[in-house]
Amino acid sequence: MERILVPLDGSPLAEEALPHAKKLASRFSGTIFLVRVIPTAQQLAAASFAGGAGMQGVPPINVSSMDKVVELQIEEARAYMTEVASKAQSEGIRVEWEVREGAAAEVIIETAREKRIDAIVISSHGRSGLGRLVFGSVADRVMRDSGIPVMVIKPTKGRGS
Picture 1: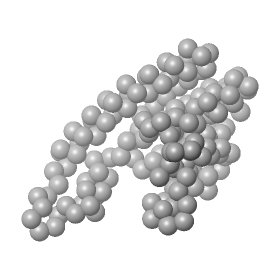
Picture 2 (picture 1 turned 180 degrees about the vertical axis):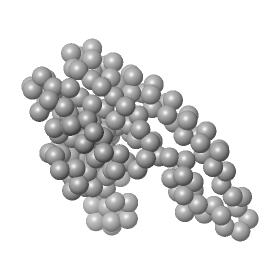
Picture 3 (picture 1 turned 135 degrees about the horizontal axis):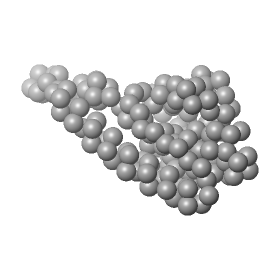
C-alpha cells in the first residue's frame, strides 16, 4: 500500500480521514496523495439554476461570474492544500497534492486510476435513508466504482448532516 488517496473538501469532517491515512502511510512507508475537487463553472451554474435561477423575475446566470468564483475557489484550495500537506510533511509523511475541477466522485476515481493509487481513505457525511437517497454519496460511488480498497471514515459524534 504505497499510494493512499485522501479526498479533501476543506472541511473538518473530510480531514477526519487524515489520521487514518497517515497511519497507513507510516506503516507501509507510503505516500499520501491529497486531492481537492472544485466544481466547474458549468456545474455551479446548473446548481444555481436548479436552486431557482432562470425563473421569472430572477436574472440569468452569468457564466463568466461563475468562472471567477471557480478561480477564487481554486486559489483558496491551493492555499489550503499547501497548509495540510506541510503539516503532514512536518510529521514525516510523504505527501503529494492536486486541485482538480469536476464532479467529486468522478474526479476522485479518475485521479486514483491516473496516479495508480493503492487505497482511498475518505470521510463520509454519515447520511442514511432519505438523506443519502436525495443527496447521494460520493463515498458510496467511490466504493462502488473505484476498483480499489476504500476505507470510509464516519463522522465523529456531533458531525455529519
